[in-house]
Image (cartoon, rainbow, N blue to C red):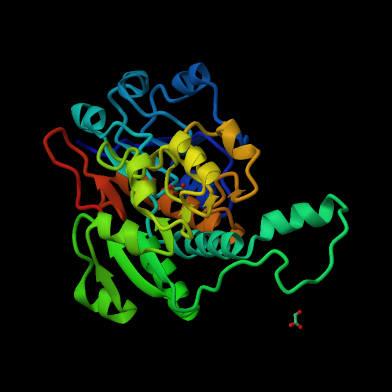
Length: 336
Ligand code: GLV
Ligand code: GLV
Protein backbone atom coordinates (compact mmCIF):
# COMPACT_ATOMS: atom_id res chain seq x y z
CA UNK A 1 0.00 0.00 0.00
CA UNK A 2 1.44 3.41 -0.96
CA UNK A 3 2.08 5.83 1.88
CA UNK A 4 -0.58 8.58 2.10
CA UNK A 5 0.63 12.07 1.05
CA UNK A 6 -0.55 13.71 4.23
CA UNK A 7 -1.10 11.23 7.03
CA UNK A 8 -3.66 11.97 9.71
CA UNK A 9 -2.57 11.19 13.27
CA UNK A 10 -5.16 11.04 16.05
CA UNK A 11 -3.85 11.19 19.62
CA UNK A 12 -6.44 10.30 22.25
CA UNK A 13 -4.81 11.94 25.29
CA UNK A 14 -2.37 14.65 26.36
CA UNK A 15 1.21 13.64 25.47
CA UNK A 16 4.26 14.94 27.34
CA UNK A 17 7.60 15.58 25.58
CA UNK A 18 8.24 15.95 21.86
CA UNK A 19 5.89 13.27 20.53
CA UNK A 20 3.33 15.69 19.10
CA UNK A 21 6.02 17.86 17.52
CA UNK A 22 7.41 14.85 15.66
CA UNK A 23 3.96 14.01 14.33
CA UNK A 24 3.14 17.59 13.35
CA UNK A 25 6.24 17.74 11.13
CA UNK A 26 4.93 14.80 9.13
CA UNK A 27 1.20 15.24 8.90
CA UNK A 28 -2.06 16.51 10.28
CA UNK A 29 -2.47 15.97 14.03
CA UNK A 30 -5.75 15.74 15.91
CA UNK A 31 -4.72 15.65 19.59
CA UNK A 32 -7.01 15.65 22.60
CA UNK A 33 -5.55 17.78 25.37
CA UNK A 34 -7.11 15.81 28.20
CA UNK A 35 -6.16 13.18 30.75
CA UNK A 36 -9.36 11.22 31.19
CA UNK A 37 -10.23 8.63 28.54
CA UNK A 38 -12.25 10.00 25.62
CA UNK A 39 -15.91 9.06 25.82
CA UNK A 40 -16.51 6.19 23.39
CA UNK A 41 -18.66 8.14 20.93
CA UNK A 42 -16.09 10.97 20.73
CA UNK A 43 -13.29 8.47 20.23
CA UNK A 44 -15.11 6.69 17.41
CA UNK A 45 -15.95 9.98 15.69
CA UNK A 46 -12.41 11.33 16.04
CA UNK A 47 -10.64 8.35 14.50
CA UNK A 48 -12.65 8.33 11.25
CA UNK A 49 -10.16 8.68 8.40
CA UNK A 50 -7.09 8.35 10.64
CA UNK A 51 -3.82 6.97 9.28
CA UNK A 52 -2.47 6.13 12.74
CA UNK A 53 -4.17 6.40 16.15
CA UNK A 54 -2.02 6.83 19.26
CA UNK A 55 -4.04 5.08 21.96
CA UNK A 56 -3.84 4.86 25.74
CA UNK A 57 -4.35 1.66 27.73
CA UNK A 58 -7.76 3.02 28.69
CA UNK A 59 -8.92 3.03 25.03
CA UNK A 60 -10.62 -0.19 23.91
CA UNK A 61 -9.39 -1.06 20.42
CA UNK A 62 -11.74 -3.64 18.93
CA UNK A 63 -13.81 -4.45 15.84
CA UNK A 64 -15.98 -1.37 16.37
CA UNK A 65 -12.86 0.81 16.61
CA UNK A 66 -11.40 -0.51 13.35
CA UNK A 67 -14.74 -0.14 11.56
CA UNK A 68 -15.02 3.48 12.78
CA UNK A 69 -11.47 4.32 11.71
CA UNK A 70 -12.02 3.05 8.19
CA UNK A 71 -9.74 1.48 5.57
CA UNK A 72 -7.05 4.19 5.72
CA UNK A 73 -5.91 3.08 9.17
CA UNK A 74 -2.37 1.67 8.98
CA UNK A 75 -1.45 1.33 12.65
CA UNK A 76 -2.50 1.66 16.26
CA UNK A 77 0.41 2.93 18.38
CA UNK A 78 -0.39 2.11 22.00
CA UNK A 79 1.35 4.43 24.46
CA UNK A 80 1.97 1.53 26.88
CA UNK A 81 3.90 -1.70 26.93
CA UNK A 82 0.77 -3.69 27.75
CA UNK A 83 -1.63 -4.16 24.86
CA UNK A 84 -4.44 -6.15 26.44
CA UNK A 85 -6.74 -3.24 25.47
CA UNK A 86 -6.24 -4.17 21.81
CA UNK A 87 -7.96 -7.03 19.98
CA UNK A 88 -5.08 -8.34 17.83
CA UNK A 89 -7.37 -10.66 15.86
CA UNK A 90 -9.52 -7.69 14.86
CA UNK A 91 -6.35 -5.78 13.92
CA UNK A 92 -5.34 -8.73 11.74
CA UNK A 93 -8.75 -8.82 10.05
CA UNK A 94 -8.29 -5.16 9.13
CA UNK A 95 -4.60 -5.50 8.21
CA UNK A 96 -3.64 -2.88 10.81
CA UNK A 97 -0.25 -2.88 12.52
CA UNK A 98 -0.03 -2.57 16.31
CA UNK A 99 2.91 -1.15 18.26
CA UNK A 100 3.66 -0.65 21.96
CA UNK A 101 6.36 1.04 24.05
CA UNK A 102 8.59 -1.66 25.54
CA UNK A 103 11.93 -0.94 27.16
CA UNK A 104 11.60 2.78 27.88
CA UNK A 105 9.45 2.16 30.98
CA UNK A 106 11.33 -0.81 32.45
CA UNK A 107 13.32 1.22 35.00
CA UNK A 108 10.40 3.35 36.15
CA UNK A 109 8.12 0.35 36.59
CA UNK A 110 10.85 -1.62 38.38
CA UNK A 111 11.41 1.36 40.69
CA UNK A 112 7.73 1.32 41.61
CA UNK A 113 7.78 -2.44 42.18
CA UNK A 114 10.70 -1.95 44.58
CA UNK A 115 8.85 0.90 46.27
CA UNK A 116 5.93 -1.47 46.86
CA UNK A 117 8.22 -4.29 48.02
CA UNK A 118 9.95 -1.97 50.48
CA UNK A 119 6.66 -0.35 51.43
CA UNK A 120 5.04 -3.69 52.17
CA UNK A 121 8.02 -5.19 54.00
CA UNK A 122 8.49 -2.09 56.18
CA UNK A 123 4.77 -1.19 56.50
CA UNK A 124 5.31 2.36 55.20
CA UNK A 125 1.73 3.25 54.25
CA UNK A 126 0.35 1.71 57.44
CA UNK A 127 2.91 3.65 59.51
CA UNK A 128 2.09 6.88 57.69
CA UNK A 129 -1.60 6.39 58.46
CA UNK A 130 -0.79 5.73 62.11
CA UNK A 131 1.19 8.97 62.44
CA UNK A 132 -1.47 10.98 60.62
CA UNK A 133 -4.22 9.69 62.89
CA UNK A 134 -2.38 11.48 65.68
CA UNK A 135 -2.35 8.41 67.86
CA UNK A 136 0.22 8.36 70.64
CA UNK A 137 3.22 6.20 69.73
CA UNK A 138 6.65 5.56 71.13
CA UNK A 139 9.77 3.83 69.89
CA UNK A 140 9.61 0.25 71.10
CA UNK A 141 11.63 -2.92 70.53
CA UNK A 142 8.67 -4.69 69.02
CA UNK A 143 6.73 -1.70 67.70
CA UNK A 144 5.56 -2.10 64.06
CA UNK A 145 8.18 -4.62 63.03
CA UNK A 146 8.56 -5.50 59.40
CA UNK A 147 10.90 -7.98 57.73
CA UNK A 148 14.35 -7.82 56.16
CA UNK A 149 14.83 -8.34 52.44
CA UNK A 150 18.42 -9.62 52.69
CA UNK A 151 18.60 -13.37 52.19
CA UNK A 152 14.94 -13.62 51.17
CA UNK A 153 13.74 -15.07 47.88
CA UNK A 154 12.14 -12.81 45.32
CA UNK A 155 9.83 -14.79 43.04
CA UNK A 156 9.32 -13.08 39.70
CA UNK A 157 6.50 -14.10 37.38
CA UNK A 158 7.70 -13.09 33.90
CA UNK A 159 11.40 -12.26 33.44
CA UNK A 160 11.03 -9.78 30.55
CA UNK A 161 12.46 -6.28 30.52
CA UNK A 162 10.67 -5.09 33.66
CA UNK A 163 11.19 -8.34 35.59
CA UNK A 164 14.93 -8.20 34.87
CA UNK A 165 15.17 -4.61 36.13
CA UNK A 166 13.34 -5.65 39.31
CA UNK A 167 15.71 -8.59 39.76
CA UNK A 168 18.81 -6.39 39.35
CA UNK A 169 17.52 -3.96 41.99
CA UNK A 170 16.57 -6.77 44.37
CA UNK A 171 20.08 -8.26 44.07
CA UNK A 172 21.31 -4.94 45.45
CA UNK A 173 19.12 -5.56 48.49
CA UNK A 174 20.68 -9.01 48.98
CA UNK A 175 17.72 -11.01 47.71
CA UNK A 176 17.90 -14.37 45.92
CA UNK A 177 16.08 -14.48 42.58
CA UNK A 178 13.79 -17.21 41.28
CA UNK A 179 11.42 -16.82 38.35
CA UNK A 180 8.82 -18.60 36.34
CA UNK A 181 7.95 -17.83 32.75
CA UNK A 182 6.60 -19.47 29.64
CA UNK A 183 10.05 -19.45 28.00
CA UNK A 184 13.45 -19.43 29.72
CA UNK A 185 15.24 -16.08 29.74
CA UNK A 186 18.62 -15.98 27.91
CA UNK A 187 21.42 -17.74 29.83
CA UNK A 188 23.56 -14.59 30.09
CA UNK A 189 20.62 -12.76 31.70
CA UNK A 190 19.88 -15.45 34.28
CA UNK A 191 23.60 -15.91 35.01
CA UNK A 192 24.07 -12.19 35.70
CA UNK A 193 21.05 -12.19 38.03
CA UNK A 194 21.78 -15.64 39.50
CA UNK A 195 18.13 -16.29 38.68
CA UNK A 196 16.74 -19.80 38.79
CA UNK A 197 13.76 -20.80 36.65
CA UNK A 198 11.20 -22.93 38.50
CA UNK A 199 7.60 -23.99 37.83
CA UNK A 200 4.97 -21.57 39.16
CA UNK A 201 3.92 -23.91 41.98
CA UNK A 202 7.48 -24.07 43.29
CA UNK A 203 7.80 -20.30 42.96
CA UNK A 204 4.63 -19.79 45.01
CA UNK A 205 5.94 -22.07 47.75
CA UNK A 206 9.43 -20.60 48.01
CA UNK A 207 8.93 -16.86 47.39
CA UNK A 208 9.13 -14.48 50.34
CA UNK A 209 8.07 -11.77 47.92
CA UNK A 210 6.14 -12.60 44.75
CA UNK A 211 6.16 -9.87 42.09
CA UNK A 212 4.20 -10.05 38.81
CA UNK A 213 5.67 -8.86 35.51
CA UNK A 214 3.78 -10.85 32.89
CA UNK A 215 1.33 -9.47 30.31
CA UNK A 216 -2.41 -9.99 30.78
CA UNK A 217 -3.53 -12.68 28.34
CA UNK A 218 -6.22 -15.37 28.49
CA UNK A 219 -3.52 -17.65 30.00
CA UNK A 220 -2.53 -15.21 32.76
CA UNK A 221 -6.06 -14.04 33.68
CA UNK A 222 -6.47 -14.87 37.42
CA UNK A 223 -3.10 -16.63 37.35
CA UNK A 224 -2.96 -15.87 41.07
CA UNK A 225 -6.22 -17.05 42.64
CA UNK A 226 -7.30 -18.68 45.89
CA UNK A 227 -5.42 -21.95 45.22
CA UNK A 228 -2.19 -20.14 44.35
CA UNK A 229 -2.42 -17.80 47.35
CA UNK A 230 -2.93 -20.84 49.57
CA UNK A 231 0.39 -22.27 48.36
CA UNK A 232 2.27 -19.12 49.41
CA UNK A 233 4.01 -18.65 52.77
CA UNK A 234 1.92 -16.91 55.46
CA UNK A 235 4.81 -14.41 55.72
CA UNK A 236 4.88 -13.72 51.97
CA UNK A 237 4.24 -10.41 50.23
CA UNK A 238 2.53 -10.09 46.84
CA UNK A 239 3.31 -7.15 44.56
CA UNK A 240 1.40 -6.44 41.34
CA UNK A 241 2.52 -3.74 38.91
CA UNK A 242 1.42 -5.74 35.82
CA UNK A 243 -2.35 -5.86 35.24
CA UNK A 244 -5.03 -6.16 37.88
CA UNK A 245 -6.76 -9.17 36.37
CA UNK A 246 -3.63 -11.34 36.68
CA UNK A 247 -4.79 -11.59 40.31
CA UNK A 248 -8.24 -12.67 41.47
CA UNK A 249 -8.88 -9.56 43.56
CA UNK A 250 -11.70 -11.09 45.63
CA UNK A 251 -9.49 -14.07 46.49
CA UNK A 252 -6.67 -11.69 47.45
CA UNK A 253 -8.97 -9.78 49.81
CA UNK A 254 -9.83 -13.07 51.53
CA UNK A 255 -6.16 -14.12 51.72
CA UNK A 256 -5.10 -10.78 53.23
CA UNK A 257 -7.96 -10.93 55.73
CA UNK A 258 -7.30 -14.52 56.74
CA UNK A 259 -3.52 -14.15 56.97
CA UNK A 260 -2.96 -16.64 54.15
CA UNK A 261 -0.27 -14.18 53.03
CA UNK A 262 1.12 -11.29 55.07
CA UNK A 263 0.74 -8.24 52.84
CA UNK A 264 0.38 -6.90 49.33
CA UNK A 265 1.34 -3.88 47.28
CA UNK A 266 -0.90 -3.16 44.31
CA UNK A 267 -0.44 -0.66 41.48
CA UNK A 268 -3.14 -2.18 39.27
CA UNK A 269 -6.71 -3.37 39.77
CA UNK A 270 -9.19 -5.60 38.02
CA UNK A 271 -11.76 -2.88 37.29
CA UNK A 272 -9.75 0.34 37.16
CA UNK A 273 -10.36 2.95 38.37
CA UNK A 274 -12.52 0.98 40.81
CA UNK A 275 -10.79 -0.81 43.68
CA UNK A 276 -12.33 -3.82 45.41
CA UNK A 277 -13.98 -2.31 48.53
CA UNK A 278 -12.55 -5.14 50.62
CA UNK A 279 -9.03 -3.84 49.98
CA UNK A 280 -9.79 -0.35 51.26
CA UNK A 281 -10.28 -1.40 54.88
CA UNK A 282 -7.15 -3.57 55.11
CA UNK A 283 -4.00 -2.20 56.72
CA UNK A 284 -1.74 -4.87 55.17
CA UNK A 285 -2.16 -3.67 51.59
CA UNK A 286 -0.62 -0.62 49.92
CA UNK A 287 -2.71 0.81 47.09
CA UNK A 288 -1.26 2.94 44.29
CA UNK A 289 -3.37 4.23 41.34
CA UNK A 290 -1.57 2.63 38.31
CA UNK A 291 1.60 4.74 38.45
CA UNK A 292 4.18 2.19 37.21
CA UNK A 293 5.46 4.29 34.32
CA UNK A 294 4.36 7.63 35.77
CA UNK A 295 7.56 9.66 35.78
CA UNK A 296 8.26 12.79 33.75
CA UNK A 297 11.18 11.21 31.91
CA UNK A 298 9.49 7.90 31.19
CA UNK A 299 6.17 9.30 29.98
CA UNK A 300 8.06 11.59 27.57
CA UNK A 301 10.06 8.62 26.29
CA UNK A 302 6.90 6.54 25.85
CA UNK A 303 5.22 9.35 23.89
CA UNK A 304 8.25 9.73 21.63
CA UNK A 305 8.55 6.01 20.97
CA UNK A 306 4.84 5.84 20.12
CA UNK A 307 5.27 8.83 17.78
CA UNK A 308 8.25 7.16 16.06
CA UNK A 309 6.16 4.04 15.57
CA UNK A 310 3.34 6.17 14.14
CA UNK A 311 5.67 7.97 11.73
CA UNK A 312 7.22 4.71 10.53
CA UNK A 313 3.77 3.21 9.96
CA UNK A 314 2.60 6.26 8.01
CA UNK A 315 5.73 6.14 5.83
CA UNK A 316 5.62 2.39 5.31
CA UNK A 317 9.00 2.02 7.05
CA UNK A 318 10.02 -0.74 9.50
CA UNK A 319 8.26 -0.28 12.84
CA UNK A 320 10.57 0.36 15.82
CA UNK A 321 8.61 -1.79 18.28
CA UNK A 322 5.87 -3.84 16.58
CA UNK A 323 3.42 -6.08 18.40
CA UNK A 324 1.96 -7.13 15.07
CA UNK A 325 3.12 -6.18 11.58
CA UNK A 326 0.83 -4.60 8.97
CA UNK A 327 -1.09 -6.75 6.51
CA UNK A 328 -3.90 -9.24 6.93
CA UNK A 329 -1.89 -12.46 6.88
CA UNK A 330 1.17 -11.67 8.99
CA UNK A 331 1.10 -13.24 12.41
CA UNK A 332 2.02 -11.28 15.50
CA UNK A 333 5.65 -10.17 15.64
CA UNK A 334 7.81 -11.81 18.26
CA UNK A 335 7.10 -10.00 21.48
CA UNK A 336 10.30 -8.60 22.98
C1 GLV B 1 1.35 0.51 31.74
O1 GLV B 1 0.63 -0.09 32.48
C2 GLV B 1 1.80 0.02 30.47
O2 GLV B 1 1.40 -1.08 30.04
O3 GLV B 1 2.59 0.73 29.83
C1 GLV C 1 16.89 3.07 65.84
O1 GLV C 1 16.38 4.16 65.59
C2 GLV C 1 18.16 2.89 66.47
O2 GLV C 1 18.86 3.89 66.73
O3 GLV C 1 18.52 1.72 66.68
